[in-house]
Image (cartoon, helix red, strand yellow):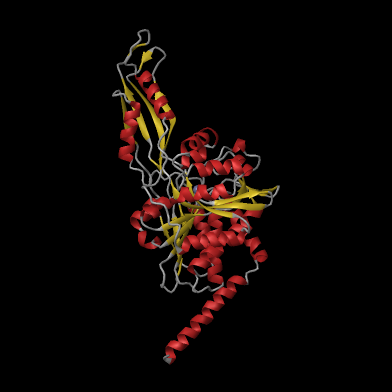
Length: 467
Ligand SMILES: [Zn+2]
């Protein structure tokens, strides 16, 4: 072996060993105060849509204090995005760790505490954004700082992104803007962000969902037209009667079941950890002869799972009428259609037209904020690391790939070929029910925050550190 090569190899081994040791040597008890401080500081910034730069200013100061450069990109100065990069050797393509900084609004009178106080009470940290999306923002930030402080040698660049406008990107200031104009800053092989999470039962995390796919919002308006007239004269072409019938038909329409790799694996694994009756039902979904009756059961009893199995149609708004005694010439309804990945929407809407079967009612698609996106893979380095680390950090937990029925900024990246995955901290089902993302009141158990940061750390090191 040439001497120079030998020296290079030897030093690489030392570096790699150093990275591994640095990783193993972390005393997480000592990191906890900083995790909590940064998480609370981020919640204390009111970053409701339109004020995201507050979070960017904070993150910029913290990252630059470590000697890492940052770049901000802003279409609107109040809604900036921030990107920072720690370089790797370049032998593998970059890893993007990202989170949105914006939070949805609050109705203060519904809160028992200040929604931007990050109040600590009963083992929880209370505040808007405490679940969505400041745990991920905090975890990414801490991990990014620690990579630098520990001098971890990387095969991949690790790119940190704090993006604006995820919740209400009506003007496209966040991910849509970045993908359109600054793709070179965030282009990567793999990405992680919100869209997954764990389920706590008792004191243990029993299940970890890794978000690999999501449905596409493809909303439409139903517009019924008829002849306007006097309320004292009944007309068969009354737009309200036609609209009412159409809403009834599409609202009850049983759209066809469509499984994909993610949902098939999800229901298989869910069956393995469910009590016998439920397990039999989840297994029944996977076989052509028994699927229909299991599907019906879900329709009535587990609508979230029913939605995962198909493109769903949900009437959400009605608009019609100008007076008590006036037949309006037009009436409209909004349908929140959520398409499974790969759905042919043109075909779907022509089927919907057949279901409505009324020439007086037209289907008018609304503009879409996000592109259709394929599911991220279940058979690559990133998924294997996400799965393996989840089982290590949460011993005994079952790890499942999951498809979100909601939408996130994973979709813009998946549409660009980036394998983007959803992660998140763990909660009990009860806490998720009563204090959810976007709920009247939001909170996260402090005990869930630290393992989640460790999870992200181990995933990032597992997939990006030099081996
Ligand atoms: Zn979110």
